[in-house]
Length: 459
Image (cartoon, rainbow, N blue to C red; front, side):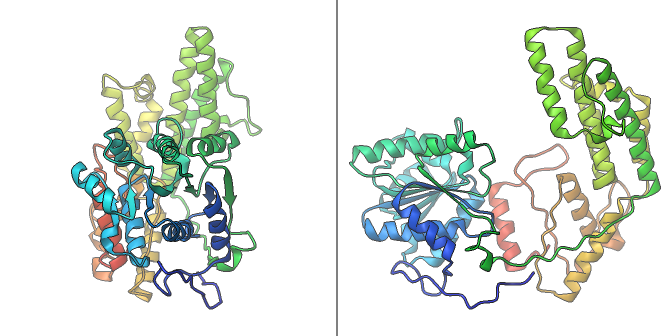
């Protein structure tokens, strides 16, 4: 990855530390617009949405001495990140930049709100404090919504924006909102809904291909590594595809799913098409409750489950497939389990694939390729940091276990333990927990990010 080739210039402002915020043409242009009217900023991750917010923030603090900045982000790790950034770049006493999370007592928050110049918070905290009348937004000079695409329905952003408009009007002040997102979606109706909910009148968007952005883009070097799926795994895939095509033929007899060019509808149909099929069946069921429609709905659920198993064996590996089969078994024996899961585990071909996966001694070859890449990178550059993204959490567990030298379903991986080779790995996942995989609390996520930056972990 190569950096842009020019000497950076820095933003100068009485409230900013010198030499810490690089001046970029597109950021300053957007910030100038955002100072004049409430605006939604659409900018890809890594191109500096927070810097744009900072440029507007310092201007509002300078112009409105008694004004307060409220910076909202949907998760605690994001709140911690924004707060740390502001403390690092602003010429403000640290006590004037307050971080609100659920760990701060309500009475303490009320006290901190009164004295702070900048408050960085999760929206649920602010909504609760508004409902309890602990705070008032009338004196807020700028309200920033990070990941503003969440501002739909009953999400806290919607209520907070409504109270901000109401309470600033009561004090005869003009509200100023900055919404930031990397992914507002392509639906114009939804974007308009977000803008209306937040009181936004203008949208500014940039991509890495725009002329004023391009000079600051790092050139990414992409390298593809192809791996051959072992014959036994391909056999398991074929067995699952036979089960899939049988379900698809039954759906076709009921009048659903058009034939594809190859005749192998199950292989070619996408998840999006299957979800659209479910919506279509449910729409018909709302008008007429025919037994054939209930049958079609259950078959659609089976097709989805089998398609997922096919994807796992082909792209993720045996470890992920076994875990998926375990969850299907648990679902099938549960009182609340779906009919689709129960029927699949009565299908002898599907069960054959389950047993084949349980007895298979190997793993997807991409695991070995990945381990070699990691070892070579760390060996060449011991100070490096590496992030491995996986499609599924089970795959993340497989990679992490291999790096730790732990057993995968009873087979020792001690020879693959990588701590002695300089690889210090950590698994970074979401908060949701599964029976076999406990999620991370937000404070644990924050701690991992810090340790990764500090080099305690490097993968």
